[in-house]
Amino acid sequence: MIVGTVGGVPVPTVDRRLRLARAAVFAVFALNGCLLALWVVHIPAVCDRTGIAKSTLGTFILALAGAALVGMRLAGPLADRVGSRTMVGVAACLISVTVIGPGLATGPLTLAIALACFGLGNGALDVSMNTQAVHVERAYGRPVMSAFHALFSGGGLLGSLAGAGALRAGMDIRLTLSIAAVAGLALVAVSLPLLLRDSAAEFVSDAVEVVPMPVSLHVVTGTGPAAVEDTRWAPARAARTRKVLGLAVIAFICLLTEGAAADWSALQVRDHLGTDEATAALAFAGFSFTMTAGRFATDRIAGAFGAVAVVRYGTLICAGGLAVVLISVLTPLTLFGWACVGLGLSGVIPQIFTAAGNLGSATVATDMSHVFSIGYLGLLAGPALIGWLTVIVPLTTALAVPLVAVLVCARWAGIVAPVATERREATG
Image 1 (cartoon, rainbow, N blue to C red):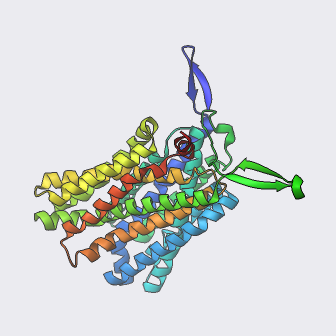
Image 2: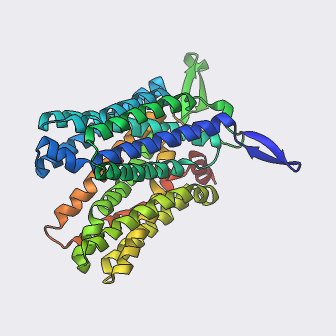
Image 3: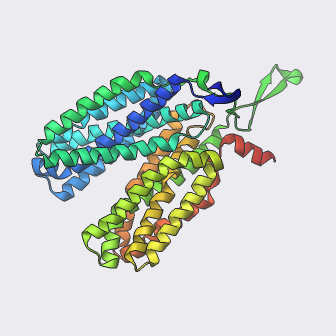
């Protein structure tokens, strides 16, 4: 961070290399969202090429998710060892190349292998790019994480539109995904040199306070009666483990709710209100729009009011939206409720990942991989849980589960407080 002057008044400005690093991370997030969307829009074409049934596809998608979890757990320790920049490069190249796989698959076996490789790359990129984003945010000295996640959503929109355009033009899936792979590799080649090394102390503003977690290490020097006990400040492993677990639980709940909204919102509107499918689709459209727009706005809100406020009031807005969905019998009001769900959730996950990356430990990526993998399980579990509940209660009633769950998140919002804040609260 550099201090310049405007009219003789000192004004903080951002080093050009740091701005380029931020742009490079933006590009990687957008690439990830775009490649995932290209796979999703081509699922029907992949089914036709491989001749698999929908039930088999569901199993294969679960395998993709399992491979992503493996990628997350492997990428954390590796990123701590070789650096997040290196891991971003490896994972981004892997996902760029393996996106071709589903298009080349000709049967169940080759598709299963292709999706496992694609999922592995996606999971590894999720952890490594968010770790890199934490380093950039730390160097900026102010919240910037939510904008990265907004670019992921924007990349997903771009990939969806590009895939839909290619399908409408009659392009072969292999050609479409090959073009995407080449473009992805080119983007990685341009972006990788601009990313930060994990040690970016030269960029960090003096205003950024790094405070270790309060715990004593007892070091005994000498022997016998003359031994001296030396008490030093050091990060508390047990306290950090508890915080990682708490962040993971919050991530699990919020992503469970996000998954339930994404997969069941349109069906809930159609079945509960008896609308046509086009109108029902507006529920997910509204949810997605407010999720993306909210992420572009969250960094300023977090900078003004803090991460705890974003999580607490965001989850309360989400709960309010779900309550509207449960009781509404009017289509516009129900659509408004789903839009509130997206808006409320939009800034929560970025705050959780920022908190996980700033625990004062030397294993930033490993901490984040734990939070990521448990949270990702929530994204998978949410749709399944709601589906199971519909066997005994109506779909709309089943949505009371995520409503109660996000209220728990609102109660536990303080878990995302920075370590320095926690110390002041504990001693004040």
